[in-house]
Length: 391
Image (cartoon, rainbow, N blue to C red; front, top):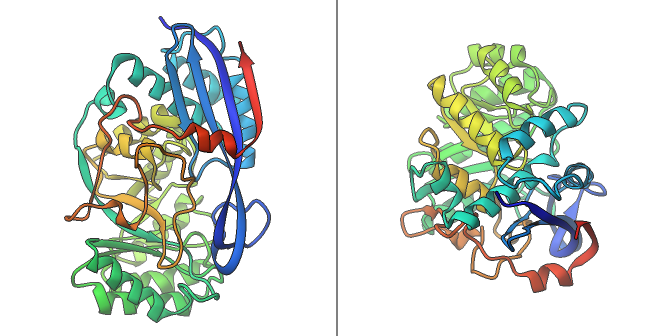
């Protein structure tokens, strides 16, 4: 048993050049803005045991301000606890955050898994049961903009062709925040014409289409372009299994839903109600490695595939232990922007366009825990507030 001595949480901010946001503290409503300077806040967790072992995690897409508040609510009770009690923590935190969205739970669980991997000298994928060491990646774009990057149908198709030229064999686009169904359908059809014969294509509506009718109209375009999946179509925020079951009956393109459906039980109920074809999981969003692997095993038991949302070292470790998955989402990329995720690694790890190998794959880090080394000089230099529990 390794008893937890202290937990530290580092709240940090960094600036991304040529990026803007639709509103303050925007999560995914960000995009290209020439000359823009967007401050982005995330947080890091360090869990240290009495024997000196240490687990670390730096949040990616899930490190929002509400998530930080929930994380602080959970980690304050960790000092003095056995670090191996991840399943018990999952059970307790599942109940404690039942009135919230659970977004602060995942980063703490991931740090505990990193700790356990370092204690036994194995990667998280190895601890879960390694299935793969690499997987094909798809280029997952920033949303369309009106500022000179992905600002037209031609800009998207040119970028898809560029991604193919550097080794990607799969491409997913996020359209414009406007939710113009006719424009979205035109873009989907044009991508199908330009690259559909040599790239696997997906479309993420990101819940921007306004109505069920819009979702159906765009779904027909997905059919015409032979898309691999159609994701989170419209502004029910992908929460209604009935509406998506109805949509599934009227189009042939498989749906990928449940990114916004939180917790194993709710995801399972959504699937059993006929609301999706593929299942989404994310170790940050879905209550950590512990919660996300439960979702993956549930999908496997039902004979379905689970697709891991977004990117990062925890996401790679999870994919390394899953048979029933197809791709790694290299999100988000564009011709003029780097990824919004923090550049916080001292080991060369990154999630950028040039992260794939010659065959279009990304590798699963094989070092202990997450398999990455964080740049703590960079993190501490960008820290705006530090919280410590225990001593």
